[in-house]
Image (cartoon, rainbow over all chains, first blue to last red; front, top):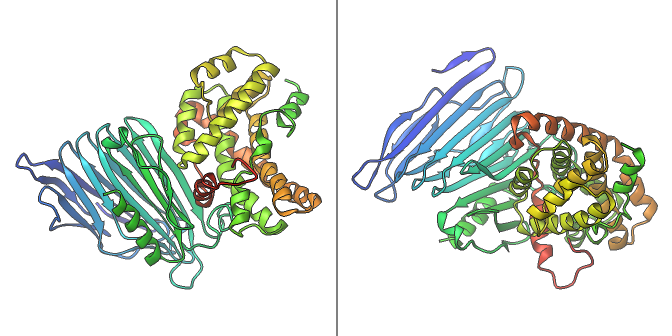
Length: 256
Length: 224
């Protein structure tokens, strides 16, 4: 349950998706909590279950600790989106906020994780960890977008680590750190060079084992690259969230 | 161990092929993101705290005797650009050739057999440091220093930058290199017990994207 103390709000949301045996996907577990409300919505495809994460409070604020855990079993197709962007804000409580995402996909299962942007507002401090465990034969589309500051403001302090493991072996492991107090040079010519929106999309498909798309540039500050495994990464920097989304959508569309 | 062995391994004249690489500086110069000493410093600082920290962590972990194959897989996961994975393996193979002759060791031989096309350079560097009787901190220092001095030296040629200015950039980053080495070694010591996932994974998106563009150029001064 949600607990609010002077240390901030702790909340966990859980989603579990299973093949329903009739060609569709059931959600035996769909549990939101406090600021993390979940709604099942109409799916675009008949065999897919679609869940919307609805922010019922603002935040995460300093001191908050949110966790979202989702898993898709064999034959299940789960799509998770969010109703609005998540805004990291400074809080009354001391210390930063944490946001943990824990995803699991079984062989023959599919997870499409396509939330809206994370906006790092001035004065906020947030540490995000996303850990994804895939069984061999799992399918994944995972998008994350970080926007550094609301319009015209300085960003907060944001660290975001994204780890994807396939069959227990590391497939992708990267950490972005930016904002005031981040290790030096984060906004310089090797890292972000003044861009205020960055994003990644990881697509894992078993058929990439046979043939993985070739690396290609998508404009000056974005690229699609095959990872060392049946997966591709789209990584992009842009001036704002709108342009970033356009770059990522275009890249996703080329993968079919 | 001898301190002189550290100087041999860290020397830019050690025949390991590093001089042919700019560490992403050539792409950044072409894109107009490095135009002088201050841009170079900002580039090197960002690189140090991202790719530099990751490499140093891997090198330190290898020097502590962690399984090189696991470290190599961890390096792949931390290098989304296939161009950079290729560069890291080519540099690893070149370093392996030089190190096996300089400090013959069964561990280097085993690593060379396991990765005939080359393991990631920081992993080879760590195993080479062990062969030379050096420790985790030494391996991390070699890695971090090469990661800063490489782009600085390359930029002298790319921009006709005053070599004194370039050396000044490297010297000004020395305290931060100490810091990064400390973080890398601490993480490597934890990784011995907790596994490779606790090693640093700091990313530099523009280095990765720039490397993919650079790999496609018809004419370039540096291999990466």
